[in-house]
Length: 92
Picture 1 (tube, rainbow, N blue to C red):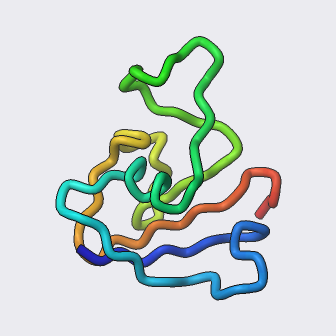
Picture 2: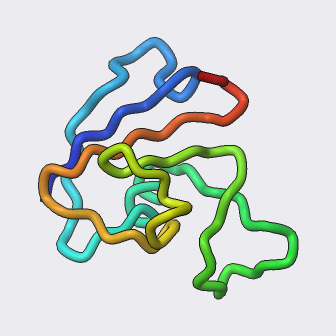
């Protein structure tokens, strides 16, 4: 499946801010982040096995909706989804 990835601020560096990414079936935000070498930091009281939404320095949107209001890093992706990722410290 293909999704559109939009990187904001300093994550984009000097390259293109938008690219197409190919992922396997059943891919989640976490799958995408791992493929990019990024991670949403855990809240201090959580561990890696927690299914609760992780948050932190990265802000991640799927089709304009913050993953905090979806299934967090476990949000399933579908063909044609637009995923925007930026650092909270980059501002808006």
